[in-house]
Amino acid sequence: MTLRTQLSDLAADAPDAGALDLGLLRGRIIRRRRGRLAAAGSAVVLVAAMSTAAAAGLLDQGDGATPPIARTTPTPSGLPTVDKSPAPGPQQAFGSPACGEDLTAQGPAPETPLEMTVDLDDVVGLGVSGTRIGTATVTNVSDQPFAGIATPAPEAYLVHGDSVVTVPDAALLDWAHVTLAPGESTTFPVESSLRQCTPDTEPEFAPLQPGPHQVYVELRFSDGLALYSGPIEVEVE
Amino acid sequence: MASWERVFTDLAENRGQALLRYAYLLTGEAAEAADLVQEALLRAFGRTTRGLTVESAEAYVRRAILTIHIDGRRRSGRWTRVRHLVAGRHDVSGPETAVVDGADLRTALATLSPRQRACVVLHYYEDLSVAQVADVLGCAPGAVKRHLSDARARLEPLLSDSREGLR
Image (cartoon, chains in turn blue, cyan):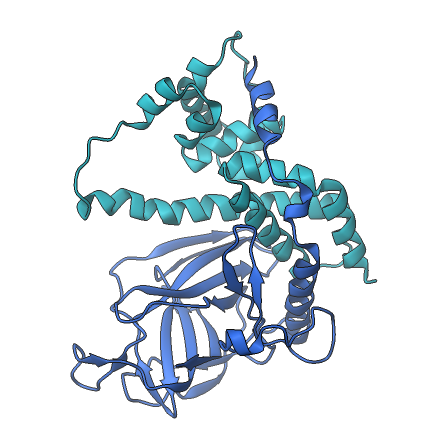
């Protein structure tokens, strides 16, 4: 039996087309396209809510005017995930504030050949550095190949009130090569300790205060290029 | 219905099964394959590209499936490379043993690296030439030949026929 035949036999075990939830997918596509169209060649700021259970079932999947917030959806593997669709808006650059400082917008970010979208996970564990809280997808939206060197993961800041309450985990001393053909994407994990930092006493951490928080994400490249997303609204319970 | 929706519906209904089979051969997991195809469709149709046809959309989706799969495996591979530093040592058979003992294509494919596996699927299942595989993966034809050779060495115990030559 040839390898080709064996592969064909194995492929017959693939799930049937019913495994694709086309209605759900169509809704996600509509929202993503709406965001990109509104961004119109500029960068995008993401605003998503984390209140999964409360928002579940309240949102339509069509192309209506109300921007979706969050929706619990089954995946083929049976695990619930949250589909948070970012609302469009101008992407704002921000500095790298220390714990307790304001995260001040520094105006519109410079145009780049890349676009970053961030999807936060539904439920995350708390209390340790390197906790994955979501995924950042970087796409080359230009017509030219892109090559650059970036930090191995985006930096995530959590803001409560007017000040930074969670700073990025200590940066790794290495870089990641990012090479993207036009239209090609790559993803990075977004990580955070999700613990309340204390100014000037970095090792001291405490649980976050309940209430609304905002996540800001920055991915830096060695040549000074930077991608920003935020604020992404989350609710700490 | 918007033009992209017609293409999306056409592609999903007529080529969805083929895309799932392609993803399944790459991943070996049914649920993971479905997730992979859906993510790739989202990327393809979530863009604001105009003039999308079923053919161009399928080509984009197939490339996205490959990229998402290889990138995902590369990231999980980081943990694979260091987990022995934190876990206790166990007497676990290596992948070569699995091939010999398992005598099963699914098991054998699981021992291949993501790029080796992609080369096998693209060359032997999708019927792409070595040059075409190299173009899809963005590497040199020599690298593809090396991946295919290494993969064949692991799959050889399963093959009872004469060698299928490279094209």
